[in-house]
Length: 243
Image (cartoon, rainbow, N blue to C red):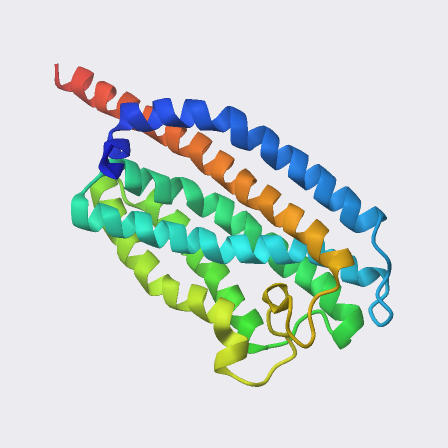
């Protein structure tokens, strides 16, 4: 079976109908278990106190905000190279979801940073690149709305997505590129290293991450199927006007 079969709108919609009943409950279950476990059954940190528990929402949202843009980049490149409409619609469907995750990450980061850093905002390399990423999300969504022809909109937003990917990468690796700023480096991948994340926080965080990924998949599938149906209705209406 070729992967390109799913570029067929009917095939994609049928597959989404089979996958959604699995990933949607998985998202709900993992988020419920992970957040309850994390917020109510983990100890307070000896330095950060209960504030550290924001990690269970902040980190998954931040990771998904970046990965959502990367998914949009891949889908946009598929559109540019292969001209598969489903890939362009999938990128469009993912944008509002990624934008919301970015907002959640910025908001929770501010609430986490204020008691730790003594400020709600700092022009730290990672925070700044993340804010610019949010602006690219807003610009991407606005460009889809502003351009009437859908193929032209897909082309323009595809180019915008490629440019914005620079800031998606910076959001992920800014701490490594610039050895300065308040934001710490990744702690999830440090298991087994000298200063790992305590297992009491690590495992509920992993459950939350699985839940956020499943939620993203479910929302993108649902929104993509909706976009496909809206595109079909637009084509039907255009044909009726010509007749």
